[in-house]
Length: 98
Image (cartoon, rainbow, N blue to C red; front, side, top):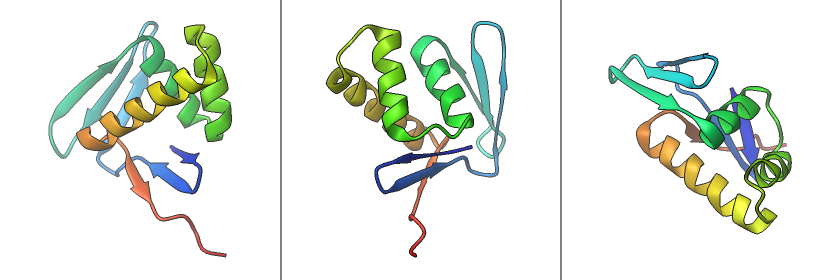
């Protein structure tokens, strides 16, 4: 899984695995032994990241899903990504230098 936020690239650590269920995404960090249940907007964002959608598309889709402005959706998306990084579900990687 990876996604881009501007020049920032996100990836899952090797210890993270997930499965999509009918109404949620179950994310497990094998290293920490923690399980996270993602529902609603969070589950949608996780799924879009697995499809490697670019950041602007994530914002547009989240705005449509939440029936909010793109500015509100971008704030929500940033909060979700920060939470996942803090929980160890995502990591920020340095962008490749060309």
